[in-house]
Image (tube, rainbow, N blue to C red; front, side, top):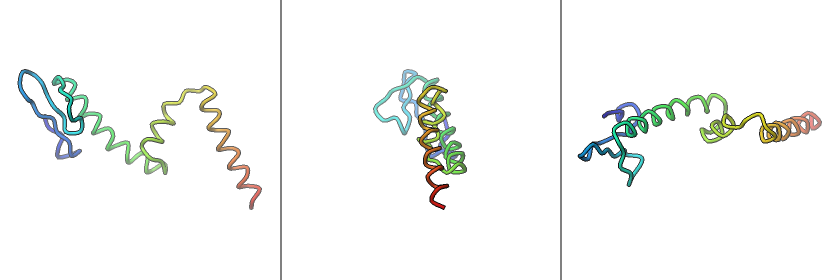
Length: 91
């Protein structure tokens, strides 16, 4: 299983259908799990580009995207609104 050239990570078969992935030390995975892990690493590489374009870290982007339309999101938007309001008054 490869992926090393594009993302810098690799999966290696250790026998009896078990695999290890370079960024998941100490875990033995099935071939499907190892393949999924490499796909996640590839997606993470793409997410870095999206986050940079938005001026966010990957963790910020994922955290914001995971919020639902509950009070949690409204609270965050409220904070942003208040900060923008203060900036407007300062000018």
